[in-house]
Length: 301
Image (cartoon, rainbow, N blue to C red; front, top):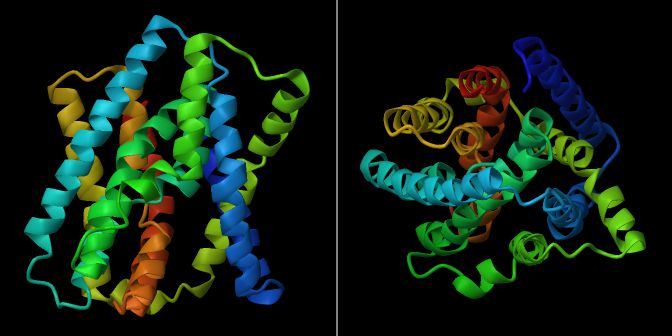
């Protein structure tokens, strides 16, 4: 388990990587490169990291943590949907979808998984991948419906997500205690080990458009308070009150403290929402999370 000094060192390392990403995006790299890197991480690097995490021996206590994480994540997603419905129902029509989607969908994949890996090791990645299953289900169903005012992309989109497929494949291999061939296993581990570095570079690229004026927008500040403070606080309180399983509650708390997902701005732009406001929510919440994440990490440990 990591101490406070270790958390600060981790934060500094991640912040440095994001700073490099911001510099590269502003000076050298194009938007097309950023999109390509996003697809590479989602479709290959992150699934390989997930598969590698399932190489952990299936102990009884770890299986219990997996089941608790799945239940906790489902409850958290339902709670986030209720919070969005209660707090943002009177928001301006062009901002309401952004606020609602950003509340139910955090950046737990790109940012949360590397942090969970750094704090909790391979078991953190395993539980993070399980935590993300309900979130991805909500993301492509209820989440998209905020923008389309109809159904989301449906379960086909959820079940064909490369990360979900990696979880299913990893679970099958983990339960059957079947190892990948050495050559394939080595290749998967090599690709998976790139997850933290590439994900942090991508987060930095997404933050390259950050403007200090975003922090003066009351709507953005309100969203950051909900995303970075209210939801993690309620998660921590609920886990403490109901004495939730330790590792599952620690990883779940950490992932609920993540900023808005990058897809918030993508969907806003695609479906005619307030894309500029969405970008402000993403960059401001990501910037402020550099302050709040260490505090929630300390509370989780």
